[in-house]
Length: 507
Image (cartoon, rainbow, N blue to C red; front, side, top):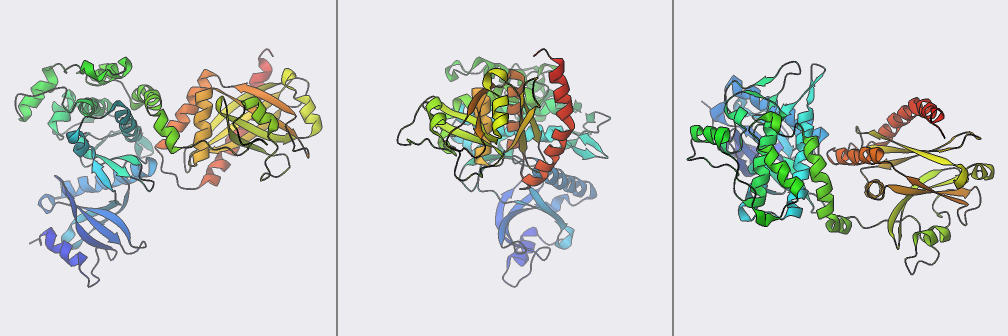
């Protein structure tokens, strides 16, 4: 005979020192779902940090549900390490009376369901949230390693109550996807066929309702319903009643309602949402990348003032006359080599504010004879961006000064995408599509000797943007040096390839 979970909680939360797994002191229940209950707790083995613990419902204590619960914990643990937009699972165990539990990060905030019930979202807020949801789902769809192969994860229950709007230490909103309790792992060599229906009918794709083979496009249909609801507080498809049969018919046959014209949505966004709601999986966007291609530039456009407010322009150099903002040319002309940088042959990136706006640049010191070799009229500059996602998101920004008469000069530097300045410079490179290289003569720090203007072509601009987008979904391990080592090895391996391609071109 099992004790009620409430009685177990009392024993684990009392003052006698009785702890769950000799570690966790339960405080109070904070949530309840179909598969179990969630409690707030203190982790006594980790500096009394606050965590959340989910217990499998005692009514579901059979081997099948135990296995599903353990799978949910494993999926969340693996994905939470890869994406900051998926709830992080820290521990798994079996408690008193053989009740399984897993330990999650404790989140302050509300779920999306509570927000949407209060009001429909502004377009700026919608884009801010949906981009993060897409990044988290993209991580899940990219999959986890199963027997050495990537196996996509299909959530199967995307809905407002499974999207949590957490607040980070700076009180900024960060989206977390919850509840992978009915998620399916796709066998890399086979499709994912449901054994029986599981999900929330209002949000399920036609193929999920029909218990057919599932792909990530099934989650994309659910996302379409979610997006429609976030903007209108209504659902695009309504059923005659709340029975499974009525919802099955509605998703199979009913045409989604058009988005209200008063919303005045960008045409590409409206088209995207309706495409997500297509009956056939083949007619929907095939992956989250296709959706992010529309959402990301719109989010940058509509949230630009907020972004600039959160991330003020940072400059590592100031002109001599710093009581006024000068033109970019005058700012560079009056800027000496920074006093906090050693006067030797180094390369560092910089973001400088001028009348024309903020601009990125690379500063370097060279020998006098090298400066003479690479005069602007005689020199071509080739840029190359390399990216390392794990264990720390890092860009290696490589520049090559080249003319046929001299040895090529490599100017590599790193942009740490877990730092504010690294993100600012990376985004500025994308926005401006150009930057400057300031060449200082060694031991003459008063002003630059040569100034080079370098453009970023469209292909590399898109590549750089993709690096930035991917970095937002990664929970950094604070190991930048490991990523730098990996990037340095990649760089050494492609140097000759880059030079060979340049020599073959007509310069």
